[in-house]
Image (cartoon, rainbow, N blue to C red; front, side, top):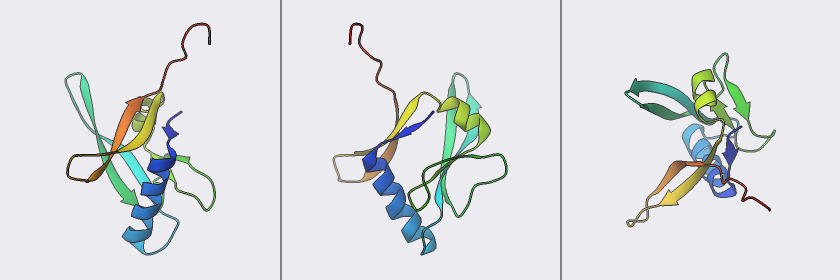
Length: 103
């Protein structure tokens, strides 16, 4: 299942509050296109999940809506935020850390 970091959860809360003026929306991931071996995801702020979406997040907290194909693609990933050299913040999908042998 997709894991959402605390920093990403805060960013989702800020985005959904700004976008629709109230809590209750979420960040939605959907498959945009499949070019060769690299699938492309579309990310948007949505007021509610679409039919068939998986919903991650607790009541009153930030939510992530995953279109079924996107949910499958992101199943073993971590959603985080990263800041570039200009200070802009962007969402990043990273691989989950693998446990080290013997730990």
